[in-house]
Each structure stands twice: as structure tokens, then as C-alpha cells.
Image (cartoon, rainbow, N blue to C red):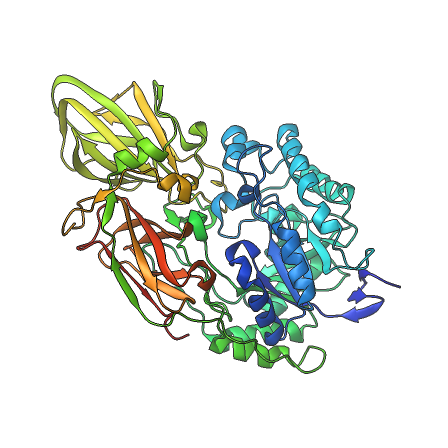
Length: 594
């Protein structure tokens, strides 16, 4: 008997029981030239399998236009070469602390609450995407002609934490089969009755997600599924951070003990995350606070997805790595491989001022979309903007006395100018200017999305201004809106920006805009980028977007993958949205010790 199957008690590979010791590693959060190293690190930790999600929105930015949609296949080939089996979780929704939970903004903007249901229009888009994506999975299934690493494929993702549309889940399972997936299918949900009843599919393996309490969690799973192998599909060994919050860590010994509990139950495991990586290019998602309903304050995720994982953001082993390796060694087959050589690190620190500058208005004129007019502010989705910002312009009529100026439905953050003078920074929790505004006046609001919600009932909510701009209680109409997308900052496009000399001694709250300069690197390698005195924005090195920085913390530096750097001059752009630090300087340093 060949192939990978689900038995009454065990997973079976070619008819023999096998325990899956898997680790999550998302190909889209790791520079492709570093895939081989990270996969080798998984093997060295004692894992025999790798798991990855697939972010639909990354690969289909517009309906029918695909961007590097074959990356998954290349990653699966790399996993196979590394001697790892592979678990694929194609969505269409993935959560993953990723922008919009992986769903395209153009889809949720049009369909709203109809996504993740049996709605015919939604399923039509899913079918088109899966038809494009899944052949590269089907061609790489274990036991297929030519062989391959893929042993299981997930149906949706934690659906029991969201809905209960069983027709939808069955349709997805049938669609996967129709697209050539023959390996076992599975679902994964929290170990609670309502989650397992809402998210599981009859005849499809159910797995559980948790970070502790293995015996209780598997006990709940067994009440729902008396037979079949046990698996923790997400063993949460760490957690993620939010801007403005504390850095989250989990004691390594506590995590290792919890992992041991999972394995002592006779179960398989997928460590989430084994290596987290980075939310490059502004793809970090966001959550909503407010308890179980997740309807409260917006909590945007930081750029790093280190996750306090056993393999850190730079790909290095941590104390948690060595403790996990010790636990996993007892359950694997044969001696563990040695660690691969460490990636090269930057040879010496490099500091540079960024002497070129262009104000935001001129950057928008050069790289932005065409300005549109509407009676009310259009949302990002209506403008077709996924990641970036939108400038809204409108007029306060006059003459009239000063009244409060506020924004109804602001998502998420706006720098406001009145008659060309900066008047304040607004957010959901502080959506009214401190000083009243008299009329007539020209008002500009530069609104930035801090990441679309990736989990809970507010997934897919619109960005920008979802309500309107109010002067006292009166809406201001006649709105001009213009988008500036992160994707517009390609090297050939930025060359057209009319740079000038940066303002001398720019201070916080001063000159927002695009800054440019070069870092002269003698010995390229992995590095950290410091931005002393800068407030909030995005950074590109040699055209590669490192992601968002924000002085709100807890993240204080940006990870620079070694393959991004080159010997000699390296071009740096910083899009500062609130005001640059004194001297407009950046510093590249070797990564701090693990």
C-alpha cells in the first residue's frame, strides 16, 4: 500500500504508522533565497514536515491578474529537496495575522458579509483562484507520479471561530477534490464544542489548535471524533505583537513542557510558528480587541512575525529551539541533522543621512492614482487601494465660526492639514481635532490603513473613511480622493519623483515625505535597520519593501535579509508620514545576538 492515508488511530505512509512532527514556515514571510536555510533549520530541530498557508490576496491583487502565483510550487520543491513532508493550507481564508486574513480587498469590498459562505458569486471567485493555484499542489502530492512532499491539504481555516455554513465547507472540500487533490483533507479549530461543530466536515479529519492543556483539548476532540489520529495543527509556542503594545514572549521551558504533553498523548503536532519570518511590504494584519467578540479597539500587528518562535526572525536557534530539539529527538526516526551554516551577517555598522527629499504632495502627484470626485469620501476598497494611503480633500464653507472637525468611521489613522498647516493626527479613538476650524477653509486628510482585520466578525471591514467628515454635525460634501499604493514604489517609478535637498535638521512633526540616500556596504549580510527619531512610515532597500516602522513600538528595528543587500552602494527610501527625525539618518547594523 503506497501513499499517505488516515487510519483509525494513526497516519499511514505507505501503510506504516508515522507521527507528523511538523513546523509552520510561511514561504511568503521569508526571502526566497533563504528558504533552503530555514527548511534545513526545521530538519535540524527534529521535524519531518513543514506547513504553510497560501495568501490569496498576495497572488491575485486584482481579479484575474496573478502575481508570482507559482511561488508555492517552488517552495514545495524546496521542502521536498530538504527531506520534509508538506502540509498546505490554501484558504481561501487563512487568518495568519495577515492582511484581511488573506482575502483580497477587492473581494471583501464588494461582497462584505457574503464571503466565507455558500454565496454563489464568492464561490465563483474561489473556484477561479483554486483552479489557478491547486495544480501545483496536485502535481506534488505524496505517492503521485514522480512523487512529492504534500501529504495533507486543509479545508478553509478555523471556520468554527467564524461561521457555521456547512454547505460552504462541503463545497470547498468537493472543490479541492475536483482540482486534483487526492491526499487527505482536514480542518482545524479550537478545542471547543461550538468551534468543532461549526468548523468540521463529516468524513474529513478534524484537528485542534491550542498552546497548552493537551489532554483536555484532545478529550474534547475525541467527543466529536472518536476515531482517527490526534493532531494539534497549531501548537502555539509563542505569540505575535501589536503596535503600541508589549513584546510577547513565552517561557521556553513552559513551551517545551507543553509540547511534550502533546506528544505524550500519542498525537502528531504542527509547531506554530517554527519560524515566523517577517510581514514585508505592509502585509501585516490587525485584530480587534474587546474579548471574545473581537469588536473593539483596532490592534494593528507589527512588521516582525518573529512570534517568539524557536527559530528567530533572522533564522537563528534560540533557547526554545534547543529545548524543542531535545523533546522531538525522542519521537523522531534516527539521529538529528546538524545545524546548517549560519547566514552571513553584515560586516560592520553603516550610518547614512538621506539627503534627498520630496514632499508627500509631489510623491502623490508622481506615483499616485488619478484623483476622483465624489459627494462622500470613497473607501480604500472603492478606490481599489489595498496597502498604502489616500489623500481626501474637501472645503469647509464660509464664512462661519469655528466648529469641531471630526471624522465618522475613520480607519485607521489620518494626518490632517487645514489651509496647508498641519492641524493634528486622528485615529479611531481620537477622531476630532483638538482645535475647532472656522470657514472657509481647505481640509486635507492623509489616511493610512494600518492593516485589515484578519480574525473575527470584522474581517473584511472597509478602510479609509467609512462614514464622513463632520463640521459640527454637518457632513462636508464634494470630496476629492487620491490613492498612493505601496505597490507604486517600484524602482523605475521612484526615479521619476522630483527629489530635492532634504530640510536641514528636520524635526518630528516637521517634513513628511519621501527621503532617499545610499548606504555603502563593504560586507553584505543579514542586518537590522535603525531609524532614530523617525515616527511612522515604510522603508525600501534596493527596491525591496522592508515594511512599516513606527516609534510606538514595541518593534524598534526592521529586519534586512542579507540577499537584499549588495556590496557597495545600496539605495534606501523612507516614506515618513508624520515627520522625520533630526538629520534624517538611518543606521544599518549586524543583528543583535539571539
